[in-house]
Amino acid sequence: MSLLNRKKEFWKKFENSIIEIIELAIDLFKEKESLPRKEDDLNRTFFSCLIEANYLLQKENRGQPSAPMYEANNQPKFEEGKRTIREFKRPDFQWSIMDILEPDPLKSSKQFVLECKRLGLPNGNWVFNENYVNHGIKRFVSKEHGYAYGVESSAMLGYVQDMDIYKILSEVNVNIESINQKSLSETQKKDITLHLSHILKLEYSEDAIRLIHLWIDLRKFY
Image (cartoon, rainbow, N blue to C red; front, side, top):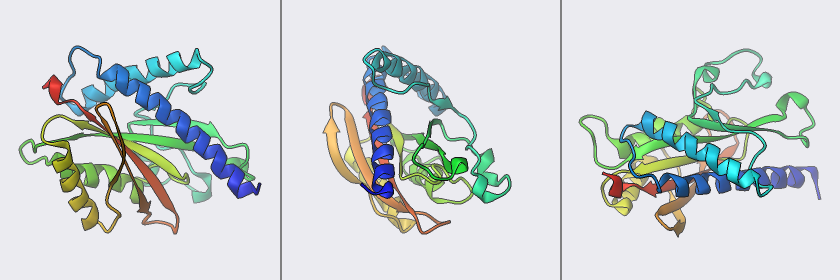
């Protein structure tokens, strides 16, 4: 097997492990008696579920050896030469791994990012389904934010608080198409979680990233 294919297999195994943690955290999250409405409070609650999920999986020799970073700055990429604006940006969650197959040790630290956003009807001037794209998806595309810089995939979590979930999907896709990116396509539906994905073109390189989307139907809580 070529080095490139071994590296892809290494990252895919890491991705699968993170998605397993997120999916179990979603199950724990939806078992809560009540949930807050604001994004920051939802994220903090979801973080507790990620910790618990990873703890439970670790007892089965799965999961990850360390907890995710919560609201931590983007990590440095030394090939950029100096500190850039992206290092001041903070994804909601990120997991780090050392890619031992990477020939350059300074490029071996890689992060899987999870960004979270509310979905549903607008709140005043704040249009959630539009801002899922403009303040979520675009952060993986733009050089300014550079979320998940240098890796093959990462994820977004959508908190569906009201509105039909497929109507939300339609509105989100209209906004995705307006920034000349591929629309979201459904991959599977599991319990109350909608799985979607697409390939994003990056603004700052010829590379692309696969963004996985997991949307949780939380309408029963509100």
